[in-house]
Image 1 (cartoon, one colour):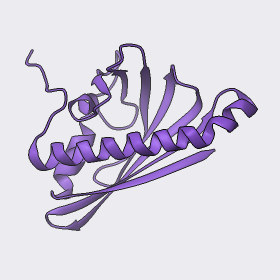
Image 2: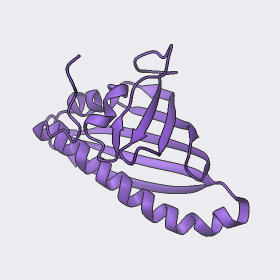
Image 3: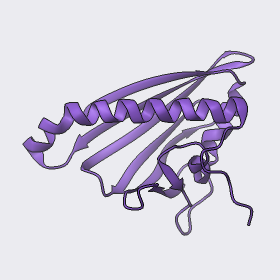
Length: 158
């Protein structure tokens, strides 16, 4: 499996940072490449077993994700169990830590196995580079959301 790790310090208490990620169906509010992230039918809203579909802004790409590890204000582990990307397996881990009462850190790690056997392994360096940029952009956008309320796709009132 290949791995990419990125970190982001956030000028906010750990509880605020955690809440932004724990609202499992609202990642679209700060993720620049996702415009919808509804829970799947019969899903719990968050915690172990919560499931969502992330629909990308391109109108074609999607990921179905399930929480498989969960410890409030410590970590969330998400299995990407279905996607139309060249991934055989992918797991994202978010680790949270308080640096001070008003400053926190999130560390995001993706481990993945590409599809297509040897051809997939040849694509791994490019995939790692793309994941590193995408995850860094996501963490930066999350920091803007937590610190300043900046939403890239605002929540629509029902």
